[in-house]
Image 1 (cartoon, rainbow, N blue to C red):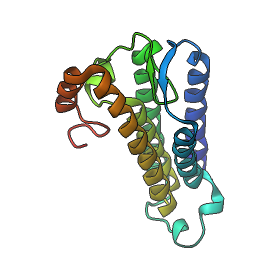
Image 2 (cartoon, one colour):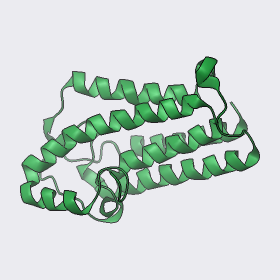
Image 3 (spheres, helix red, strand yellow):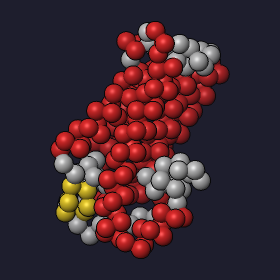
Length: 189
């Protein structure tokens, strides 16, 4: 693991520290996803991250270098990773006490549409994906694309469940919001 990839790990530690410090400052749940659904999501999310970062997966075709390993791609990947982490933290702060690690409906749940939620409907996941992309750039191997794809698949799965709850709770307001703002990738998807 090169120095740039190691530095991206420190960005993730900052993000996890922020999450941990704010995890208890949330509203009570009214409805939550099943444990099986939660574990399936976490399996794909963490498997994707492990594939990107672990040297064990840098074998065979997964270890094929597709991005040059140099200081320019290293610094560029770090900047992308830092931007993704910052975007996710901004989104978490904007969501405030409506946040949950699980797919949930909160007591007195609010439909947040400001800040990063005016750019994408699920900016925490977008931030995570940007951060994983940055790490994948610093690694430069095919395994980075595979890991990023798994993280994206995990978020697509989770957002599908969240969207269902939001449509049920907010009906036309959420339908209108969905028409204006893309799910995960601004202007695209």
